[in-house]
Length: 309
Image 1 (cartoon, rainbow, N blue to C red):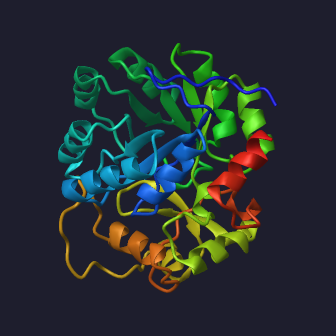
Image 2 (spheres, rainbow, N blue to C red):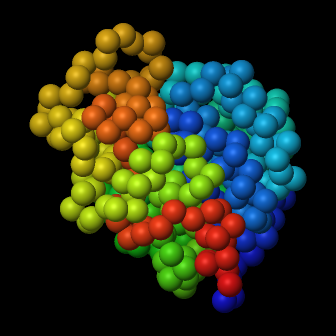
């Protein structure tokens, strides 16, 4: 199939696919490097890491690939500045950021010659990002996984934004198979970002039972909760998710003040880490709304073969 040639700053991946930066520690160096080796853009999730851990992840990824490696750092984390500067100093290829908005990061990345790609969910923020110097934007709909900035599905917002900005637009949310990617390209987009599809891979840094949960999902198994960050998020219906929906989640046993703003109703990073470890009772398992369509665990290589054969 014919697909667009994605260009972000001076970066030109062979294929117009960005792997979503899934925290906590789901998108590690191994997954990011595997995607980069297949010609996409691999992303290390920096949120909930220390700056030393992030630099170590970048170094490990560099040993595994000569491809394009970026980091995704939530603006909502308290050590955002330290993480961003550490990634820049480590020579990362690009930085992606969502869950809030930082004007300063545009200048830091420009000075370093590193592309900055904000995640946006509205035309207003897309235009502001372009004006501030974004190299590209990821437009994420309410059908994506992780923290969300809108309840509108990606299909309802990407075309409007693409038609009103002059920088590359990457669509995120609802891209599970080749036909979804083709649909994004038919809407004029320059690339796609996928999280859930790469979650259910051999290289994904989650427990096997998390991957099995994904491939056995039914549509009704996916619910939208309100995170302690204050944003909606799509997750698998598990005991913890149901407690959150019923406004009765377990209070944090201790708080390390990792977020700029938090309701303290529960510890989001602890819950996500428990999910990564496969703790069904105590974990919060983030997935996109379309994740129930994933029916097999593949290698990253197999995903690229299915998408571009």
